[in-house]
Length: 131
Image (tube, rainbow, N blue to C red; front, side, top):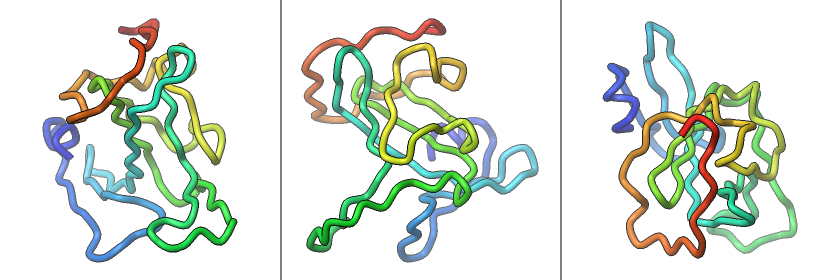
C-alpha cells in the first residue's frame, strides 16, 4: 500500500475477505485489482513466490487453488530483503508459483523497500539485470 500511495494512487482494501485480490488502487485514473504476495524463501539464488492456496486457515482437503490472472490486474510481490515487483497479471506465468530475482521479471522490479521483519534468508539471492 505504501509503494502505491507513494506513486500517487488512492488505495483501498476490501471489507471482509476477497479470494482474488487484496487491494484496489486508482492509479493513473484507472482502478486496478492487486494481488499481494510475500516470500522469504530462496532457492538456487531466486525468490520463490507461492501463488496457489492450499486450504487457507481451514483443514487442507487436498485441493490446490491456483491463482487466476483473469481475476486481478497486477501482482505485487515483496521478498525478504525488501525487493519488490509490480507485475501485470497477463505477464504472470504459472498458477502455483514463480521465481523472482532473475531476468524473466526484471522489467517489473520496482525500487526496494524495507526488508520483511524477522525474515530468515538462508543465502543471498542473485541480483537481477536491472538491479
